[in-house]
Length: 193
Image 1 (tube, rainbow, N blue to C red):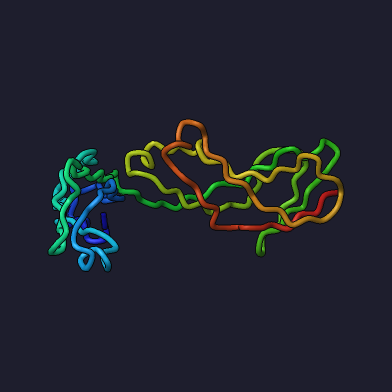
Image 2: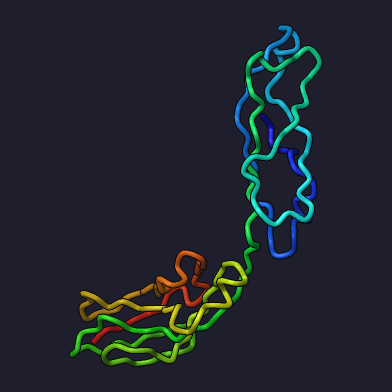
């Protein structure tokens, strides 16, 4: 069953929501050989989603059968499953990069663009990372400063020069409802002495 044109007004669901997907089951049809020969899929009458604010787990569908094709006797016409989800939004935040795992006797010189800082031991440095957070408006409104950490991990790092990628970590309170993408810096130059 084709779902390519199965919904109307997918862009007009209720404010704060968006159409995500539609799926239907399969059905066996029968008919004249000529009618079945070029039949690749069965279309359905479009389902109107205007104003909808919740998923539909069993929406009735109406098949559009070509001439000479019928549903095999005894089969039930499947229902459509339509996913309507809270609309995702994106915000950009800045967080100071945190150094972790730097040995007690080691000093790291960290360069990002035209900024260079020297750090002995663990803690935050004066280089900010830019992160894009994606989630529902409700989830994003709950994000606090401590929920998003950008870390340079020096665990098992010896003296030398390295290119390192900061790692974004989300607290367990938001990790299931918000995703994060590091925008910059994607790499920093590090010299460990």
